[in-house]
Length: 605
Image (cartoon, rainbow, N blue to C red; front, side):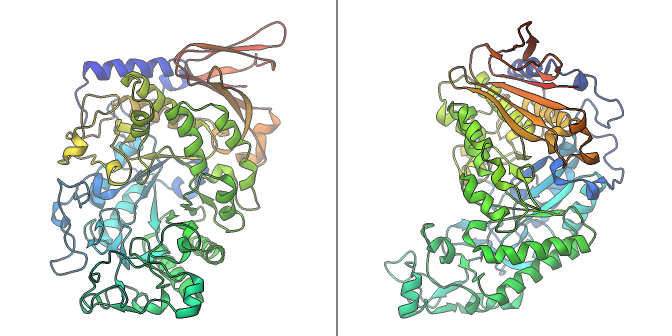
């Protein structure tokens, strides 16, 4: 649905036009591209096969929480029938509860995503959950009890297959969010719980037992209450011997590997039977649904030998099923590249979510930290390189469902900045994500200027009209709308800028495959530049390298126009996009002039 354009939105659109005025290739878009002025796709229903051939480095991801996106089928809003562990939790006025979004709702909005340049959808977990437990509601999908079927709140297995089939026909990949570390909270401990599963008087958790304590006195005595026995599938997951049973983690030290997350049953992934069982679970899901890849939850809370066995087995099975570009990336919630890269090298995962990128880029664009923060990050890119992975396969992002949104970070760290500046900063940060190394991930709602009030449930607003008061009182970026409205507006300035960046990225293979080289970083002016240069992993055997092709990307993250002089001669560079100007002088130097909060993308061809 296209919303009416307000005066504020028109003003913000003017900013976008200023940022992209120097983009002739996009302002004269191919009339046969299949995208109309309304943001809908002319050829969206035409079957495509290129999704199977496309390398992940050519993708643009959209990270969506199905429950909060779009309700396409109200008949499944309460999940399984009453009495089931997967029933209930619907309350559209509560930020904690289920809101009704589902597979049918995502399917209805595929054209909206395709027109924004999205080529891959990553959904939060969709397998069957324990709907309600201590700590809230499973709207997020991370409390799985059944690893063989979709949660009934989100539809049926048939609904999921139809979504995937429809997305593939529109040349859009679908990625599953999977979990191996834990299941829903079903196992209880005799030392902490009553027979019905409730906590004993005076307790609200089970204190963690260290490995030394386990050696001396054993684990907790595990049991399952009568009403929840046999609830997990496959059947082996009901056996307490396949869990650590050491009590609740504090997320520090050894207990981050062996403890229960807020009571969630922590699986003993060191057990060879568990390794085999988890590989069996997820290879069967690949065979049944044919997804295009996995995002793996809580990777750093599972020891490396598990990933060394699991990842190669999953990749090999996907290839055997004809999904040769199947991609796997893990969530390692750590901004340190040394820690992150250990999972792509020693841990044998193809990629991880780049929390280092989020920390550095978010610090610069959302907190006004020195731009050299990014220089330090890029200087460590070599850590990810090995025989089967490199930094360009990492998934880069600006915010998510756990930490919060760019709009929230801007409001928190730059409260006195104008709404216009916050919009410009968000646009610039997204440009950085699309033009930098790695695969960009747009968090649902960011393209509509969502801000949120914080992390966790405060960053999980509804795209469909919301009834949550704490969501609806937020001021969004780039629009006078609120989350009380339907927010699928292809005329929003952030949506339009993301679509432009995605189109540029598609047209420039160097933005997908090129090596990133630091050029200059000026902390006083808050201006920096990097180059994307060809290498031997480029398509067509690195032809671009033979032609000395390169891209120069410059950013001004300050409120003033800035001019920088660099010693290298760039007279052959042509404008690709952005408002920055580049000119060469007779003495072999190059001047680059950037308006406030702007970027420039230049090509050597």
